[in-house]
Image (cartoon, rainbow, N blue to C red):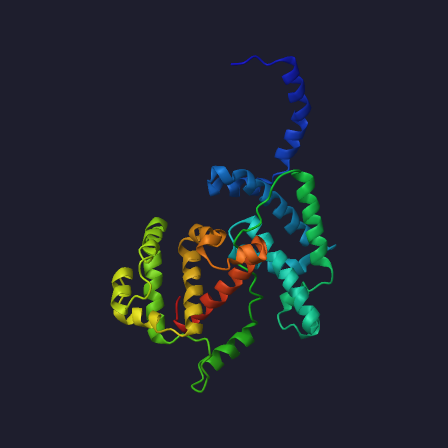
Length: 309
């Protein structure tokens, strides 16, 4: 082992207080979360982003910002997401959207009480400035990746009486079918497609995708054989109109997010895999949030139309 020179010792003694402060600034819950994630190469980014996210979530709940109005939104975001970083992104986006809604229709016309409560003028911008200051101050000259996928805030649960009224309306025999409802035949096709995705590894799905390179216009039998689905389901997919085709594409994304999230992330980050790649056009964080909302919407339609539990 190389001997420790007086110069090295002096430098170490100078840096030791800074190292101690840096370690103390990572909350124990963030350390536990990142250790549990188990990805050694991503550990530094997980720790840095998580530490700032915890600070920002705590700040949002102070009286200088949203106070107790932030709590139900943050709790919903935490229930839907699996990290402090994505919980923060969920809350921050919810606050921005709430403020935009207030500007469009006024706070009095916002039906969701949680959205109305966080529709505060100027607060999202203040939080973003503080976030940038904290990030630059705590981790100078460090690059931060802002393209995390997250599940967006979906609003407060409906009051019991409203939920009962909605249930009564849905069960009424004259209840009109929504335009985006999925018919039983397409439900069956989508269920088979989800099974294809859930039952295969990411590598197997990549191989399956590559096998379609030589198929420009497959017929139902070829598609059914290649995907190992029924011919009826293959016909449903091939005979889709433009809206149904878009719905199918978004559901494929929702199924990948559910069963193979890293594969979906890789596809979205690689411009060569998608024409007009949204992350390239809109910026990572904004695009990921937008895509998450679209996937949420189509997944919700699928769940309700096809009675998926």
